[in-house]
Length: 122
Length: 158
Length: 182
Image 1 (spheres, rainbow over the protein chains, first blue to last red):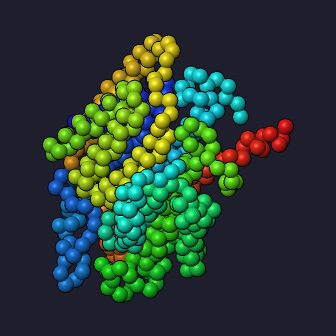
Image 2: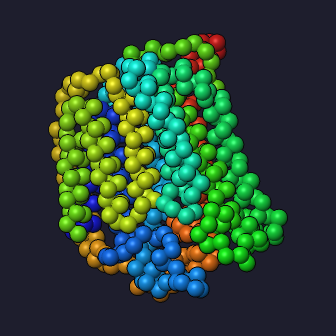
Image 3: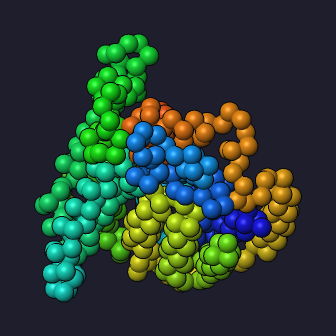
């Protein structure tokens, strides 16, 4: 059920990016899709009753300095978190690129409407 | 763009120091607590964005102008590549090898201290510098156009 | 567990408002609400690194989006609505949604550790030997900067290229160069 709600968020973003005529609305649809994908990846790595994958003094066994077995059995997956960390910052960079295209198009044509932009040349 | 009222200017001149210090802390302790280079770099960029929103674009450009920001961006990226290339001194398969950890720190018990984990803090500093300078650069460039789409000033941009 | 449902419903309602409203500034504020709900959800999913990054990035994204749409043409687009095109795309998206739910039912339940059941999963190695091999207490930092450092190099390149693209598009010299060439 959790995965289905996350996919519903993705589909709402897809609908917005496909059927809207306003350029800023299309950008908003792409942003919503990116949020939904990041959320889905982190939800895949979750474990019920898990702890964050950060070691502090409580997880080290006293005396030997090894990792306690309770941490290994109850930590969540660190790999999707590493992938999503870079994906979030990349989405900010691509948002800046898309908004700069929108601003430039508004300067040239005077509107955000994509049906009025016909003469796309080089 | 113009700045804001005097209340916003006074408060932001006190708060920007705390934001900058917090950003440096998140970058530097990235191998011990949550955070790291990416989020710390974004916090550093948002300190300068606060300066630009509260005081106007010209004041922020005097503090960190466009050519300096783009050069800092390049320095951060090149520093990250240089740290990776230093591993090549220890053999042919040493690109991105954590040579400080394996050569110098492997025998010492430096598990939860600040000086530990080899090249990871150095890479965090390089990434934080790069991401912070990039994002401040892009917000500065986006603010040059005024809302009625007439260009703001006449000097050249690189 | 109930907190996940509440946050997901909050995000879906905010997404509906962001998509359907005619007021651009309201849509941008609803996108900010979605990002804020996602950040709290990351905190409950035991990912504090991601929660910090998400909330700071979402604040900057709000600033960029508001800068783009403030005091510009806020009235809605007039003209004939393409009724046929909208209906066809809604039907196709609905079919995609049903197929996606069918496929998502084949995944293990939410909350079971998928990596613990696969014998040679990479995450098991990262958790067991991360502290010994890299010396970093933050396992996520050890993954992105030591075990998988090539991905970080690729990400730095992508961010660099996107920023260069945005800076080049918003240049002022374009018109002058075109006039000099003619």
